[in-house]
Image (cartoon, rainbow over all chains, first blue to last red; front, side, top):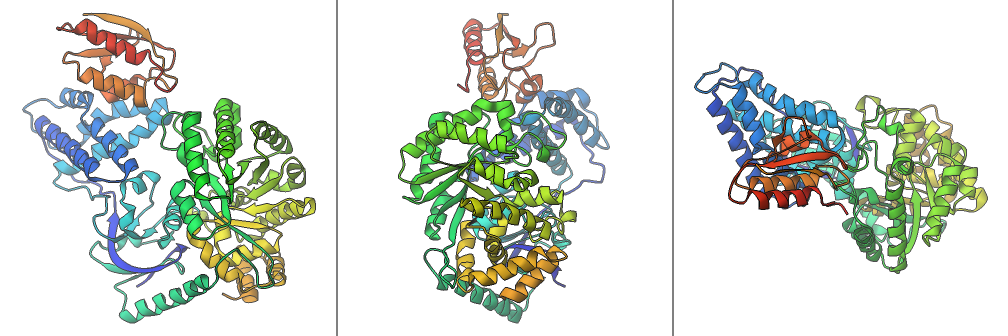
Length: 546
Length: 89
């Protein structure tokens, strides 16, 4: 019985299942004050060992912080107050919950960074109960090459995993733009999201994962493996047959660029013959920080990425913190509706000086490098915001200033917005979520969060036409640029450059090399007039082929 | 028992790095150290959870108390320095 999900990162692999599950303890757990304290101590020791033995810095920090909390004298004190010495309890779970809940509530009420520590507390409480009940917590860390199966992977999970051992990622929840999908594409390993029933696969099973088709096959036959691997290989061969700058069959130039969050990504993009970085996500440098990096630190971090690209173009996106990417020192207030709240450029309303210092640092780094540095702001909604950003960025000596178009307002007003700046980049992940009013992290809505939807394509068409009329470059830096057929549709709509995960560039380049601009126009026309996202995809496949 | 009321200098308040420096120094003190708002029950300054849950913000006054011991005054001075330094600057 094979399982079907949404393939979000192509590739075919066969490997052993490594499940990441939360074991629920449903039986009473007998114990004494002494046994509970001993279990807590053992949990702390485990965490210390794991922190010591892991190479990944982020994971080491998360584990050391958890170990420190497990060793906290106040926790021991609280437990000793609730559990009387020399008393045998039939079930110690309520006492453990009570002891932790005081700290839990205090941290939750403080919000922001403090509230994030609640996850750590819960993890420690859970591990303590598991120890007492004789069950071992399933270790998140990978010790051999495996196929990782989970309900969903949070950034904290991916930090704790040693991703060098991950052959593929399969999750039951999540959509095409979820964290899991982005991480997998970044690593160039197959991934499937929204795969119902995946966690029921047992840990000793060998499975095949086809990240292009979104299929998981338990105990595959040799024939199935060969067939899928050959098909995948032929598609890859096409990708590898074309090199150099992006070009359609009729010679039309298409700038193919890479998305990057750090120096490693930038190096991968350079290796994939990207014409530059179309999206340098600076928030990744801020996400794991408790305090703002200094201007000097920022200059260094930006320089590292710029210098990896030689004289090529790098489009820097200013801090896009907020919503699903909170930065500890900025997003301390809990918002009712973070996706619609103070995020992206809107952060100037609450932390104006942070953005100002970032522009200063980008300006300095740009003046010290041979890379061609362009800068854009995320979540620009209005022409006023575009004008304000442009004048502030130019004041720091930045010559090419642009905006992200990722809200319906900015797409509708693209002509006015673009009049204020030099270029625009369509962030199709957020644009899709906002045009469709559908949370991209909610797998129940995955049919509504497809960038194939004609409503999304029409918003893109409007923005691209406005840019074409003004003669200004307009790119796409969302995940849709990484889908070869959708990439062709975007070009047909008037988009002039495509930026994607470096691992996707070769395939898009190979696919586009077989098409001319007329075919892209026909595909775009059919797609924006389709009845649904599904129909748009089918018609485009008919026109362009696989 | 020597004690002193000081103002939290760190912009982020008493968490993350400033909190962890305070906790490590308090744990190394060898004698009990407490911290709290004036007039409220103080908490164990060697406890990450208690110090975090205290939630002392930038600019707030807190009282640090070191139990009597050989070097109580020196220990107090070093803890005061940690809390009154802006570690994020």
